[in-house]
Every structure is written in C-alpha cells, then in structure tokens.
Length: 364
Image (cartoon, rainbow, N blue to C red; front, side, top):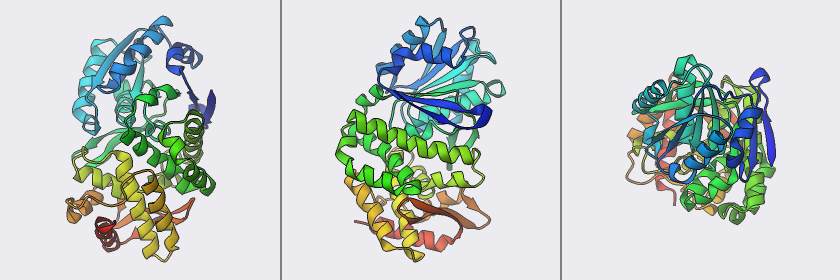
C-alpha cells in the first residue's frame, strides 16, 4: 500500500492506494476518527453500485457503522441541484446529524456531488472519497465539490476537504476501455503542468497503463496525485497557483456543456482542450513542438484531439463566457510554455480563442 499526505495544516488528510482496501474500510474509518455513533451515507451511481456498494456496506457494518445508501443515475447529468435535494431528503429521513459522514463511492461525478452534499448539509459535515475510476484520482483530491448548471459546469460549489481518500485499485478492473483512457488524460495533465520526466514515463508506459498493469497503474496514480497534492498544498482555494490544474478545462468544459454532457467523457473533452491550449501557445510564439508532442501523446492513448465537426463554434464560445475563468472581458487560459511547464495568462483575446476553436474543428 502507498500513502500520500495532502498537507493542509489542520485539514491535512491521507490518500491510501492499494488493492483490496474496500474490504478494510472500517479499519481506515476508525483510524481517521470517524464515529460509528452517527449514521453514514454512501452515495454511489447505478454503474458502480452493482459491483461495490454491498462490499463497502458489509465492510463498514462489520466495524459497527450504520449505513444508508443513495444511488444516482450514472453520468454527468446527475451533478444537479435536483439530485442534491433528493439526497438531502434521504439524509434527513435517515437521521444524519452533524457527526455523520458522507461517503462518495464512484467517479468524479459522484465525488463532486456527494462532496457538495457534505459541504452544504447542516453547513458542513465530514466526507470520505472512495474513487472507483482513474479520472477520480484528480477530482477526489483537493476538496473542490459542486454541481453543474445548464449553462456552465461546476459553477455551483464549494471547497470542502475530505477526511481521507481510499483508493482501492481493484475497483478499476471493471472500467470500460474508453473510461480508462479518459481517466489517463488527467494523469497526463499532471505531467504536462508540472513534470516533464513524468510525461516521458507515461509515454513509455502507454500499454501498461491502458491494460491497468498494477505496478505501473499504482505508480502513475500516486505520481499524479502527488502533483495535485503539491499544488493544492500551496494554494488550497485557487487564488493563484492552483489554477494551473485547469489546463485544457476552459475549452473542455465548454465542449461538455455544448454537447449536453453526454457525448464526450470528461477526459476526452479536456484532452481536446489541452491540444487547444498548446495551439494557443503556438500562436503566441512558443515552440511548435509543444503542440506536436501534446497531440502525439493523446493520440497514443486513443484520445480525441479535435472538436467534433457538428459542434457549433459560437455555442462553444458562449459556453466559455459562462466559465469561471472568464474575467473582465478577457479570457484566462493556462498555456503550456514547455512540456512540464505552464503559465496562467489572463489576457488571452477571445478572437485568438475563436481561431483556435476553428482550428480544433479542422484538426486531423
């Protein structure tokens, strides 16, 4: 088992990586001081529940914990205020109190939604992340929680740190190949913003990662989480440095919104967005190899590097205007200045972004 500490002073918490951790959940909960006197609510989705909900419930109940569960439909559309309200209703009916804990069992959607339930219920109760996707190695770390609005992704939310992240690598075995590749897009992102050597390691282990070879997967997830933990430790509430984690997300979030959150997986959308950010870098005079290398590595993983031709340029631009990264008439973009290095640029013109969006529709 690997352990990583997200260093946030009194809000610090561990991330545990290993195989079979789900069966030992009660021990980890007790170790973290989570009380068994108040009920625990497990939030999961319709894809994850058949595989792992009963396992987690049994593990916790064997340690004396009382559990109630709520299953949301699988997919991005469950990150909504209507689902939030339904979960809170069940929590109230089950008697959750200020000492209760919400457990997110699933991918990024479940983590964001359940975390926001915990952040808002009785003005904030504890929660635990139990990620079951590769993508969630990014979203489960750092305390960003929330739901979507029809006009913008993640526009309603909070910062609410988990008590711990329990990452049972065995849960990744049931992921479809497309979900695996999508999740690895965030791992690549962590290298692109911070660590060129990690990008080179990923490039050399493409097949190992795609088939979930245990040692490569464990190292890659640990390394990716380490990058995010370092960034979050320096800037917990995204006042400055943490914004680099948004590489590819400005365009990516817009593509998700315009396509109705059901055509592109998150990792696929941000892969296109990262290629777009590299195109912006090229237009700004940075080395053209940044764009070439970014596109090459995503192509190796079978990830898209161009915008689906039926998506409308102006609708994509409109969606970006609703993004939190649009400020004072100019667009804020995380732009790669080299592989493993990025810069937050706050005055990227909308015209340049429109040109890049057009080019992304023409990418082959």
